[in-house]
Every structure is written in structure tokens, then in C-alpha cells.
Image (cartoon, rainbow, N blue to C red; front, side, top):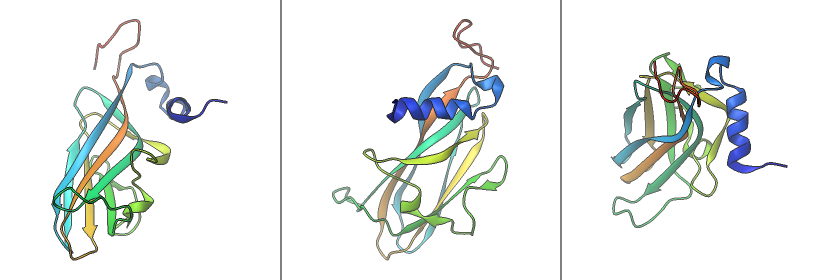
Amino acid sequence: METGAGLIAKRAVAFLPPLMRDTIKQYYAYTAEFLPLTASLTATVPFTVEASTDFIVTHLTGIVTDVGNTTFLSSVPQTVQIVDASTGMAWFNGINGTHFNNVFGDAQLPGFMALPYYLRANSTVNVTLVNLEAVNRNVRLAFHGFKSVPGSNWENGFIGR
């Protein structure tokens, strides 16, 4: 029985639109960094998908430290809301979304998505964090998945749009 990243990748491909299933795919991660996330405040950091490739998000990781980057937090007192600005769709209900630990894992146990999230080329994603404690924190987030080059396949190579 196959497990791990290979199984996740196969399941992710099964949910892609038919025209994307045979395209060239490459692992990639987009990041959002809050350096620092100010005590008791809300901040938004955007990232934009490259113009030449679509991106499929499969799992999420986050590292939260003190501002000196010497102490890691395992229980993170923050909420997160993620909005795909190209569609206006929020990933979670409510203005502040959901608790950080409901979404982001770490390198040992990533936060796997029940279904992959498809982002079209040139999409902008806004990540909003609310710091629920009166202490500044450094927050580094990664949206892991794979690029899919539209119009490409293994026989023709990267031909793009």
C-alpha cells in the first residue's frame, strides 16, 4: 500500500481539471512572512502565483518564533484567514478565520488539505493573521504544492501558455 507524499500527489492529480492532468508539474512552495507579527494586532501579507504557471496547494507549514528566532512555539495563539483575491473566496468562515493550529503544521507533520486548492496563474492570495497575545512573534508560512505548466506535457516540454 502506497503512503506518504507519492500517494498525496496521485490523489491531488485526480482532482485536477482534465486539461491539467497530463501537464508538467514541479514541486514548489510560496511563502508569506510576518517579521514580526506585532503584539495584539492584525496583519495581511500577499503572495502572487507566477504568471506562467498555475499552482495547486496540497499542504501548509508554519514556523512561529520569538523575534530573536531562538524559541519555537508549538501552540500558536493566532487566527488565520486566507483569501484568494482573484475569486474573492475566503478559505474559512468568519472575518478572523480559524485558529492557526487548525491549518498549519510543521515539517514533521504538515497541515494537509482535504482537497488540493487550485490557484490560476497570476492569482494573488492574501494571508491575514491576528496575534492573540501581547508579544511580537516572527511567523514564516509556506504553501506547498506543485506548479502546473498549462499547455505542456512530457513530450513537448515547457511550452507554456
